[in-house]
Length: 268
Image (cartoon, rainbow, N blue to C red; front, side):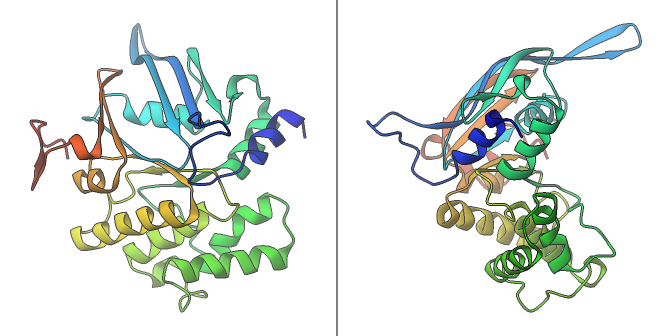
């Protein structure tokens, strides 16, 4: 494995977003991202020059209406897709310079993923699902099992280790998915509509859990969401419209109302 990918992992995580000397430390830096999709004779520009710096240990929510480009931007950050132009830096390493093996190494060790549909393997228990990333990372089996048990205890499922997804509620399945995202001690967790398939009460519990883990584990959480409840736990909210960053707001500057936020329309 090339040194470049190992350097990304070595940067580690942590809630302290200051470098020695007091400079802000950024875990993600996106520069002038452009992404186009070809549909027949038409070219659609999903991202049109997006730039954003994300601090280490930050809880950031990306919001915007359907078709705004937020999911495309989310995929650029996670290395799930490549821009036509522009760059994404993870821990100061340009992802475009990584070959396929190095990119896979980075995704395995540095980024955890949480999906709206949970994406658990049905035939595996909660313990086996959480342990799976440690197997891909080449960790000894006993270490992976111990890590999975620890994480399931943290998310409140220490008593459901040997239950399969079909034996768990939606909220419990998402807790398993959250535990799995943390299996390899990532510096970044990407949460794609993490409350989208949950009822109001369960969604609120999952949001609170993510914020708790953000504070206690020091992991940077980046969420693409329609859920306005996510705003209340975010350090910053990035609004994407028409493939551009429309505005960036600090939580304390947002006027949050039941069912709406400021003068933004309900986009759910």
